[in-house]
Image (cartoon, rainbow, N blue to C red):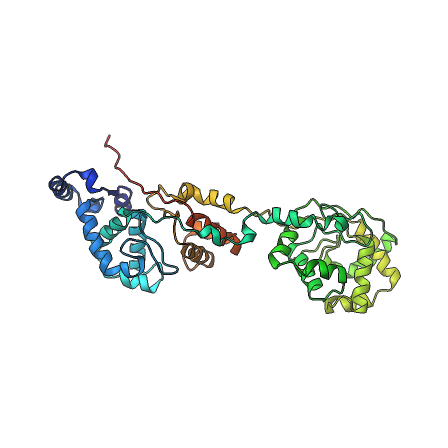
Amino acid sequence: MRHSKLKLFRFLILSAAVCGSSAETAAQSSAAKSAATDDLRAAYALPQDVAEGKRVAEKSCAACHGINGIATTKDVPHLAGQRAPYLYIELKAYQAGTRGEGAMTAAARFVSDDALVKVAAYYANLEPPQPTAARARKPASTKSDPYSAGKAAAAGCAGCHGETGITEIAGMPNLVGLDPSYFVTAMNNYKNRQRKNDIMQALVSGLSEAEMKHLALFYALQKPARAKTPALGDQAAGKAAAAGCAGCHGEDGVSSDPDTPSLAGQDARYFTAAMQGYKNGARDDPAMKAPAAKLDDNAVKNLSAFYSSLSPKAPKVSKPLTTVELAQRCDRCHGLNGNSTDVRTPALAAQRVDYLERVLRAYQSGARKSPQMAAMSAVLSEEDIAGLAAHYAGQKARAVLYVPLPSK
């Protein structure tokens, strides 16, 4: 295995222009092959090797990947200009059955090692593909980062809920300290009238699911603080009554369940109105209807005073990276703008966008194995995957030449 890796690191692709005349080239090829040990037999690919690789490609690869290495079939990668050792490594993996894709395993199973080297050299020797117009397919929601999109949308909510979701108007809810999952559910409940509020229904009716998620993210990432509104009622009595609520909403009013709201720091009048809504059916929630029905108005007032006095906490949410920021992380291995200079790592520039999307999902699901790629892809949303695929498909692919270092 060590010898196999060594020969891949020393892979060299020479064009006829570099090698000189055809007679000289033939002599060099013969001398190189006779002088090389078995371990380094495949370390050099000269023009005649590339020509033989083309013949292999015509028989075994061109139907899917194109004889020019530019695939026209959905989910099939371009091979032109790809790093030859990477192609060889992947072909060997298919041959061994470790990649688990039947069509490619069958295609590579009976191909000799020498032929694999040459077909890898052939495709690596071709002009790489041109970038596509994939960026035009990029979803609108990924053109700017979700946080910025949420901040822009929240400007329309500031009049009632404050610029950062901390209300100063009694009866208006605090929007900080809420998990995004709960926030989106609440917005959808207004939208489908499970919560009956004509003003809120009108405001959220035009929002898409993505826009609601952006709003939820913005408020979740704000520094939480109590509502700047007064509260009537007995806090001590409210604390005693809250013992029955702690199982869902937390002893300190901070829920550990993303689908259950935190109540710490909430506006007291809004809390009271919400409880009345559960009682009279204005809020359709079977889980809250029975507990609310047991409380009289005085108990609800005391609960509102207790919860409004507590300090809210920020949910465990991280600010997502933009496509550009994600690509900067990918470039560490795949090269600037996806033009890899590591012989073992594939180039991503100008690759098919549908293929890139499919591969990222395969790493996420574990269908394709790589500890590094599994970790990198695990945190990606569908928007992230679409954005990254479009980003790299739109980059200019650059051909590379690997040369051996002189002996010391």
